[in-house]
Amino acid sequence: MNRLVTLVLVAACTAPRTPEPAESAAAAGVRPGIEVFLANVPPAIKGKRVGLITNNTAIDRAGTLDIDLIAQSKDVKLVALLAPEHGIRGDAMDGVKITDEVDPRTGVPVYSLYMAEDRGPTEAMLKDVDVLLYDLQEVGGRTWTYVSSMALSMKAAARKGIPFVVLDRPNPIGGEIIEGALLDPKFASFVGMYPIPARHGMTVGELATMFNTQHGINANLIVVRVENWKRSAWMDETGLPWVKPSPNLRSLAAVNSYPGSVYFEGTTLSEGRGTDRPFEQIGAPWLKAEDVVRVMNDKSLPGVRFEAITMAISPSTPKHKGLTVPAIRFVVTDRKAYRPVRASLLLIDEIRRQHPRDFAWTRSIDRLTGSDKVRLAIEGGTLPALLDAWDREAAAFGESRKPFLLY
Image (cartoon, rainbow, N blue to C red; front, side, top):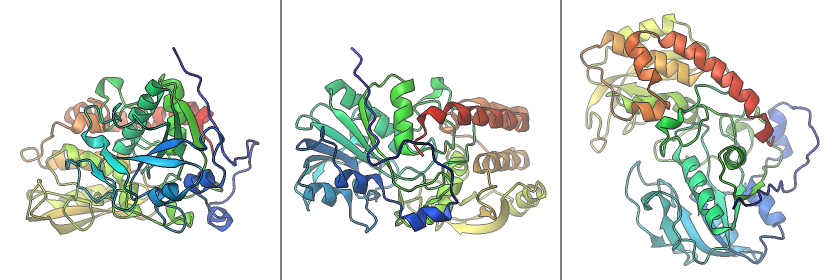
């Protein structure tokens, strides 16, 4: 039986608002969902035992962790912590196994969602939980696994018949730019569960609302909105503190390139892991960086130029470990004009053209790009036409997402 879907917008004005410049967002004081929630806990949640899906990225404006804020609240009782990929402290490298533990500050058990059978909460994890709260920093790219953890947790909450509360946060790379094709459902995985673009321009609260409605999750969903955030505002325009969302996304510049540069994971080139600037630079021992850069810069892609460099890769990194290799860095000159998906795929196309013997795909490329179309288009010499079609898909998504936008 379908459950009634509930959407509560706490401390939010529902009347139409005139867009304002991004600069006004910081001046007005952007308040993340955790602060809005604690200032006015919904009556249906008061006194309940809560499980908190979180990590080190969930903080208030003063930098205090949600874990401590919820544990100290008199309105709810924290009984479980659930950690996504990278762990409760956000310091575990990609793919590292994370075991259950006990939080030393609160004494609350910490369960690893990443190690669960389907990477969602189990019945045992939720046995004492009356409400699930979710607060994790999203990065604006479809392949970010925290969003999949949210969707799986929403399903678990729906099965148990308990509320699911999203404590919303700004999209760090803004909410206006959309890029890339929608994921083909045949290629759904933990790095992309639902048909959204590579860069979707939505907050986790907006994504949760879309998933709940369009994909039949039917959770009792409560979204606690961010106050005073405008879609045009990037993280460094909000006044909120920056916390790297994973060990390899260390700056806003890296997050900006990530929706496209993540595709290098699906090739034999390094995506910059194990270097000082992951996802901002790529390389391989056989790469003719200067030749590729010359061709790419002649394309005059908006908002970006390419720089030939060398990069030293850590001995602990699987790809080209311990080597110093020729590399190419993305140098963003206008972040609003820059389209990382197009830039990264055109770069892959050119590298493959110049290095037909050395370049190769890895098994993850189709999952990362959301279909087999990229691989086939590059192999068939039709990538420009595919990218133009993707631009049309992104524009259509911009229209279809409107009913789910909260800001």
